[in-house]
Amino acid sequence: MKGERGFTLLETSIALLILAVVGLGVSSLFFYAITNNSGAGDRAAAMALAQQQLEQLSSVSFDNLEATVTATGGTSKTVTNAGRQYQVTTSFTYSPVAPATPTLKTITITVTPLGRSTALSTSTVTIITQRASLKTGPYSG
Image (cartoon, rainbow, N blue to C red; front, side):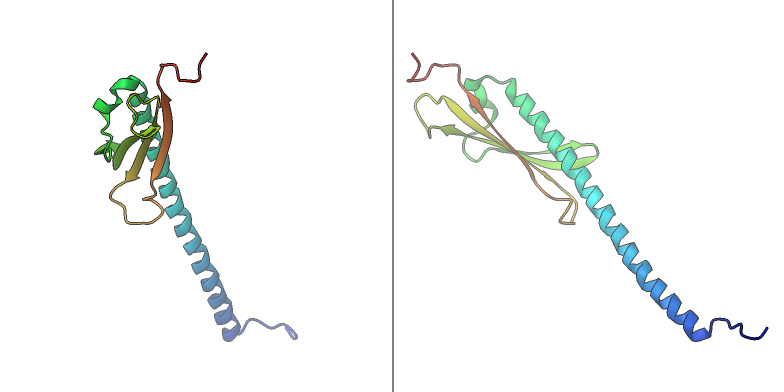
């Protein structure tokens, strides 16, 4: 029929090129989302492991923390949880610093996922808490 025109080969090629550029942009977005989701899963598992370690230390008495965790540099160990390996470092400091009888200890637990090379999945989780002794301080009374 007269007046009807179809697409030319040039118009079709340009439309396919635009579609290809948009498709590449969307595929990179999916890759970014997958990387972030796996990193979030590692951080969640690391946080759960740090909380487990903290709960184990809460069952230790205030005076016996030294037997469980060394004051100089802390202890470091590799733990496997949910099929992944994590580096767990535990340390504590006295408050006030190195008194004869400490009344407050600050415990730091740091968990780092091992074995992955992406920056998002190797983020470290740190939990800091304080434990007080049951002894009465100098201001009680």
